[in-house]
Image (tube, rainbow, N blue to C red):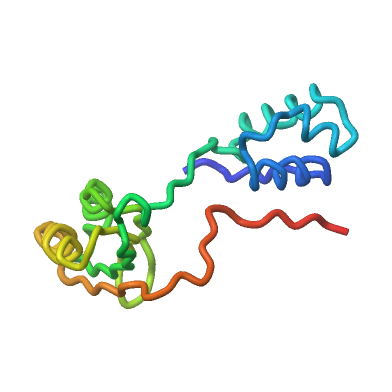
Length: 159
């Protein structure tokens, strides 16, 4: 595993990230005008943050409920000792799995999944999960109400 390199973030970079976080399609010229710098400065800064891996990409955030995926569930998975790597690869390949995290605690893997209904959650996801040979047990926690859901950490500017 490589050495983690911490990138030195100045206030301008934080302001650029903050602007892009709320609208990744915002033109660099518009960001530059708001921040009082040249658009070439914003372009160069964003390019550097992409090269450094701070900005990993730009994505479209989809409202899954409007596509019929009304059920969100977090599924705790316990796997056979020493098989977490194989299990998480297999689990990540199941349709409907949005996130897969290896964790330490009373379970080994935590999944965030979306389903069109409870029948799909049961038949498709839970049955597929339990069919993976490394899985010992699973427990689903279905979300009743989302109070807050973020896609990245908020940018806090030092004062």
